Image (cartoon, rainbow, N blue to C red):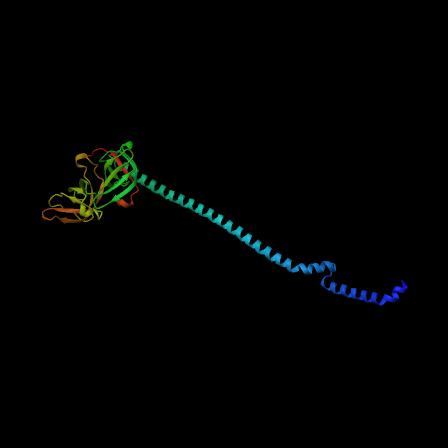
Length: 280
């Protein structure tokens, strides 16, 4: 051993010194890990950083997808709820309107005891052309509806007369239709005439009041109602108002242009008078 130290002692000291320096340098990089562990950590650090970045990116994308999916589902649910609420609002408005019509019809029943039997009907079709103007209703012979029954609004305004009847439907000629003709009375003057449709006036939504007595003094705005003469139609149904008075081509007689009280295009529900009492 002494011989070995004499021959290699300096090299052993040198190796020990080098090892001490290496260990000292490695200790600079880590005070908690062993040199080999610290070296491995140093070598793998870039890979760990890359993995962390990729993992974070994927996590962000996954969170974004989940949030977007959740938002879409929530949006669809909100749309469904809004749609349901809008439907409820429309139904409530329809119910209020129907209740209003029924209240006014009840009031009309109380005022007009002669109108004894009504049938409520919904309009399924509006039709207006140069030749005709009519409505189609969802009531017919199955409901006791007959030809020539009068159709009115809940306020007692005349809409027209039933012209054709099926089992569960009927056609109503509007007041302005050229085939319409019924006795009329000017409320202010008691003048009697005939309210009838006219080709030249139908496109304007108007009708004529003809066969007025000589010397009739009508004014714009005069109320015109059904006369009830002959017992074909009830009396006192509102036809419309005088819009203007004109003289025919011969200059011998005058006639009035009437504006109906009803807006035919706005109607959705009407009432059919199935029977009435004749009032003298």
